[in-house]
Image (cartoon, rainbow, N blue to C red; front, side):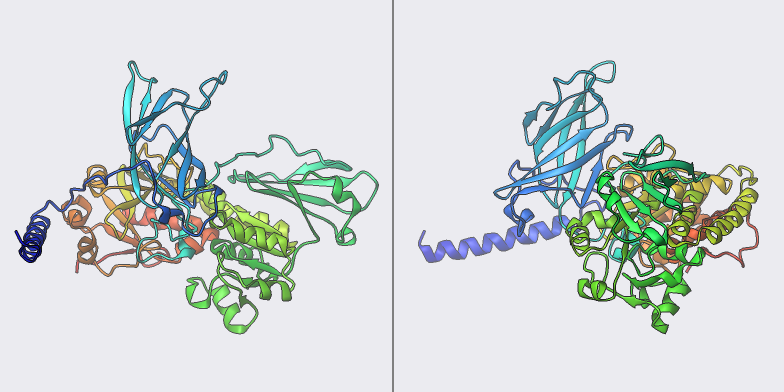
Amino acid sequence: MTKRKYRIFSILLAVILSAAGCHAAQNAEPVQETEPAQTAEPSQEAGAGRPDGSYVPASFQVQGGTGKVKITCPEVVLRQGRAEARIEFSSPNYEWVRADGVQYEPENAGEDDRRTSVFRIPVLLDEEMTISALTTAMSEPHEIEYTLLISLSERESEAAGAGGTEENAEEFPESIPFQLGEDSASEPPVLPGFTFTEAMETYYAEAFDVYYYRRTDGTKGAYCLIDIHGSGQYLLTPDEDSGDPAWAAELPDSITVLGACPDNIYVAATSSMALFDAAGALDRVKLTGTKADGWYIDAPKKALEDGRMVYAGKYSAPDYELLTSSGCDLAVESIMILHAPEVKEKLEELGIPVLIDTSSTERHPLGRTEWVRLYGVLTGHAEEADAFFKEQRAQFNEAENYTDTGLTAAFFSVSSNGNVIVRASDDYIANMIELAGGRYVFTDLLNGSGYGASVRLSAEEFYTAAKDADFLIYNATIESPVGSIRELCGKMPLLSDFKAVQSGDVWQVRRSLYQSPDTAVQMITDIHKMLTGADTDEMVFLEQLPPD
C-alpha cells in the first residue's frame, strides 16, 4: 500500500470510528457512568505553577463505603510534578490500601493503641480516582472501594455548581479541614499573669467559648479571651491597656492580642454580617468582601450604597493596599480562607489579625445564631447581642413544641454535572427539618471529608433514598433558582417519578437563607408551615414551586 493510499485509508477509518462512537453515545443509557482509567503517576498539569512542598487540599471528596468511617486528607505533597496524599481512616482496622494495583501498608501500623489507619499513596489531582481498602472490622476481612477527588486549586465548591458563587459556597462547603471541637479546651486556658474569673454560658453553640480574666498585677479592667475551637484564640483588653503590652510576650503563641474592641473590621465571611447587624455593631464593619449586588439582606447593601461600607475585594483576593491604608484592625473570614492560606498569611504579615468564623460547623441551628454573642463581645455590644439572642431563644421555645408529623423531606441541589448535593444527617439543615416536625430522609448519611460538609450523591443514590419523600426542598442558595417543577425536572429528569413531584409538594429555598443565620428560627417555622399546610403568606425563606 502506497503512503498516499495509506493516508486516505486512515482518514476513512477515523471517520467511521468517530461516527460509530457518536451513534453509541446517542443510544447509551443516560445514567450510566464509566470509571476513568487510573494511573499511579498524576499529571504534571495538576500541580502546574506550584513548587514542590506540602499542601492542604482545597477540596477533598469521597464516595463509597457506608459513611460510618470518616476519611480525611490533611496533606498532599508535590515532588517533581507528582502528588502523594496522606489518607487517614478514622478506624484502626484497615490493613492496606490499593491504588492502581499497588498495595500500601499503613504507616502507623506499629503504633500501640492506634485509633486510625494512615496511608501515603500516589494520587491524581482534579480527577476522580478509585482505590480499594481492606478492613478487618467485620466478621471476616472485607475489601471496600472508594472514589476520591482531590484538588489543590482554589475553586468554587462542587456544591455550588454552575449557578453558585464563592460567597454561598462558604455556607455549604464539601470539605472542612478540621473537626468540630478539635483543639478546644476542656477548661479555661491558664494565662501567665492572669486570673480566670468566669466563662460565658453558651446554650447551643459548640464551636466557641468566651472566658474572662483579670490581671494579677492589679491592672484594672476585664480581659476577654475568645476561643474558637480548632481555629484560634483572641484576647481583648481594656482601653487603658490596648497598646503593645510587655506581658503579651508571655502568652502562648496560639493567642492573638487584639487590644481594645476593633472598630475598623473587614468582613469577608458573608454569613457573619447579619450577626454584626443583630448585635448593633454594623458601624464597626467598614470593609466587606461582597459587592452590593451580592447581598440578599438589606443592611450591608444599604451601607455600601451610602458609602458607610466599602468593598475591599473578595476573601481570596482582597485589596491589601485598601485594607492597610484604611487602618483595618481585624479580618473576619469564613472557613473558605483555609482554601487560600497564602491570603491569611499575607494579612497577618501586614499586621491584620484574622478571625475565622466556623459557625457553619454548628450542629444546632440556634448554635449558629448564638455566634451573635461572640460578635457582641468582640465589638463591645455584648448586652445588645445577649438581648437579641434571648428573643431568638424565646421564639425557638415555641418551635420546640412542634409535634412529629411523620412526614419526610429531602433537602438538595443538582450540580452542573448531574450529581446531587445533600446535607449530612447531623447537619443543622437536617436538624431544622426534625425540629419543625418532619423527618430528614437521609438518616445515617455522613461525609468522609469532615463534619458539616455537603455530601455528593449520584442521581441513582438520591433516587433510591428520596423517591418516596413527602416533600422536596430545592436549595436555590447553591444553584440558580428555578421557576417551576417542570424546570427543576429539566435539570434532573428522574425527579418526574418522585412522589413529591407528582403531588406538587416541591419547595425552593430563597437565596437570603445563607446570609441570615440570625433568624434561623424563621426557617424552622417555614418548614413547619410547609409540613402542616398552614398559611404560607408570611414565609421568609421558602416558596412553593408551581407545576409549570
